[in-house]
Length: 351
Ligand SMILES: Nc1nc2c(ncn2[C@@H]2O[C@H](COP(=O)(O)OP(=O)(O)OP(=O)(O)O)[C@@H](O)[C@H]2O)c(=O)[nH]1
Image 1 (cartoon, rainbow, N blue to C red):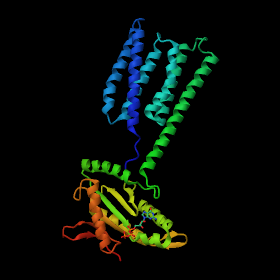
Image 2 (image 1 turned 45 degrees about the horizontal axis):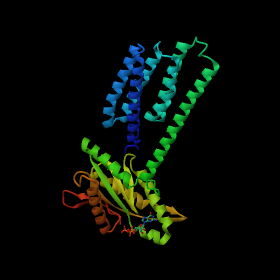
Image 3 (image 1 turned 45 degrees about the vertical axis):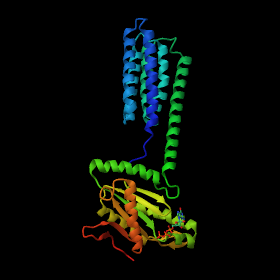
């Protein structure tokens, strides 16, 4: 299953804003530098503004926001170091090094941001010492300590801010996509992952199957042992599914005591076997609750992407219909697609 993805739209907006700022400031500096005869420096700044304008067009539509962020930063930082190495550039221009942590963290996140900040600020500091190391007016304790403390403050705060932002984004994403009782994916996450898996299946021609699982006579557990016992059973069932299935399978709680599993690269024949293994595992499981051992069974309906439908609604309806047939056949069984013989493909009934 694909991992949680960071919100690329956030980075896209920041990159667009950064490109606009780059265009404006490069043009202002070029306008100041040309009249002073600094033709090469002015030319580099106009080239940077033109490149940023071109990137602005690309970035609006690209799906590879992170790659473009990295490319833009590598160009911007190289140009900055190149300009700072020019003899006509004053030592005060080195103040721009303080902006680097802010820009890199906003565009690349905490890890890459820190790496690129340390690398480019270190290169900038080395360049400063190379150019002005022999100037006692500049290389003084007060000047250097102010510069170092300011640099460490922007670096530390940018890194801390971005790490906190990334953690809260992850927490909110998890809250919005996870069933709080079992920790399984919820319906919203299932829909998201289905679209991704559907695209993969279509592109690669690989099979994709759906299992709909419903605990049998679950109401009795609630009625006889209480709602908390019911919750404990749901959690134990979820753990069993997680243990038995592959990490790439998406297990979701669809609501109540109904679960939906997406099995990628699996056709319905194999999916029926997997469903049967799950059914048997639950049948053999003793769920311990407050000293009591609770037993439970599950009925499962199987559908396959392609033969049974091309969207999640249709596939769930087909899997649900087969689940209903499994319930009607006495529960604790699996129902898959009609086999060639015309007989419903059915895993062993053990009742
Ligand atoms: N403890 C607990 N019970 C829940 C939860 N969500 C739904 N239920 C209960 O699940 C039960 C589902 O009952 P039914 O739909 O009648 O199905 P069943 O008893 O499992 O019977 P069959 O599906 O026909 O085998 C209801 O009693 C719901 O109150 C939950 O989050 N926790």
